Image 1 (spheres, each protein chain N blue to C red):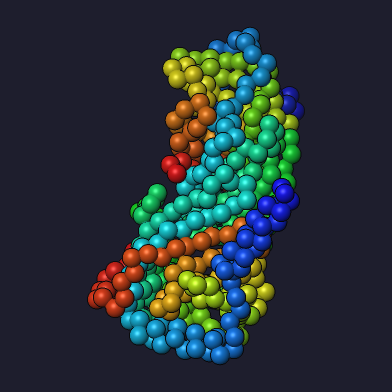
Image 2 (tube, each protein chain N blue to C red):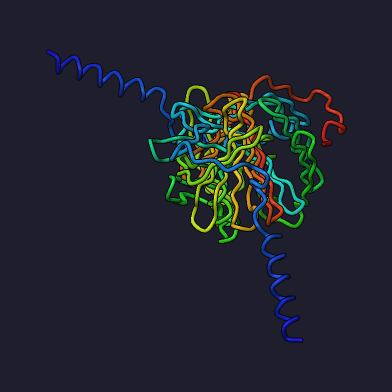
Amino acid sequence: MKNSVLYVFFLMAVTLSGFAQEQKMSAAEVTSFKNGVNATAKNTKTLTTDFVQFKHMDFLSKDIETSGKMSFKAPAMLLWQYTKPYQYSVVFKNNKITINDAGKKSAMDMGNSKMFNKLNKLIVGSVSGNVFDEAEFTITYFKTAEYNITKLVPKDAALKKYINQMELYFDKKNMVAQVKMIEPSNDYTTIVFKNKVVNAPVPDSVFSN
Amino acid sequence: MRRYQILFFLISSCLLLSGCAVKTVKGFEQQAPAVTNYPVTYFSDAKTDYVYKAHIAIYGRDFGGIFIAKKINDTLYRAAFTTEFGNKLFDFEITDTSFKVNYILEELDKALIVNTLKRDFMLLLKQNHAVQEQYKDNQNTVYKSDAGKRSNYLFIDKTSGQLAKIVNATKSKEKTIISYTPQSNILAKNIVIEHKNIKLKIELNYLEQ
């Protein structure tokens, strides 16, 4: 009797997890999804959103939570601003990265660094949805009831040292809702976007540090 | 003539020696040690994730990041450092007598950097200091603890009863100073690690989670 209860429970668990599980997209679904995301990205002139970042490390009792605001303006201006629990902002603009760390300012030229260019492209790409770079990544596509999921594995050896896999969760309106970056050690960072505002006027002055 | 030379040599070596004696407890009154061991309690709570915003100033350049320390068991600590975006830069396992690199970013994996980090974080997370000598002035009780060719001077603030700073020194020179601003006996809200022989300063500010 006890065994059969267990069996039913087990069966239910498997069935339930089956529903929530990711399914691989068919070739036709991939094409239609990519077209949808590309069209949305093309029409996204500006984007502002709040975000919450969770840093997971195996040995910690809970994830480290930080949060802030992000502003994007096409083609490639990006402000990434942490406001809690500390003030830290990064601006990507004209091939330069400027950092304001609670008043301490510094700048970096991305032109000299292939690595930074790739990271920048990945960050801007994951925000704008322009990420289907088959030359840089091995890409696989999945779907759940809520999300379409793109999993990118870097091909470049230098990038591979930083990122084992990048997962982008798109909502059914083809906007990025969540980004998960898995490190070679399998620790990961999850960034959840909320309160998105698309194509509201964003002045260039926002992108200064 | 030769006698004057010898005299000159003797006088100058005397001046040299006295000029070089470490100044850490100069003017302090030596006492018989009241304890044989001083346990540092700032990182001692195994339930706390010790998460700090870090500023590193090295030879005129500034870096930011997140420093994380966690007591895993009675003897073992994990110490990790990530960027604000969550990318891990290093991850060490530290006990009072051992040091193991779980991960370090290739760009940082240089003997000079690893040895400096090892020395700093082993000192920061050292739990037990065997006491050989004791000193006092109006403000502090100082325990001197031998550490190989160097010594650690632990300054205990008489008013608060808390560890205020550790000076790591050779017989003649102070090398590293760790200063603490305590929040409680198990938590320092601000920690500054300052090097005297190289231009390196690490400041840690506790992040309330």
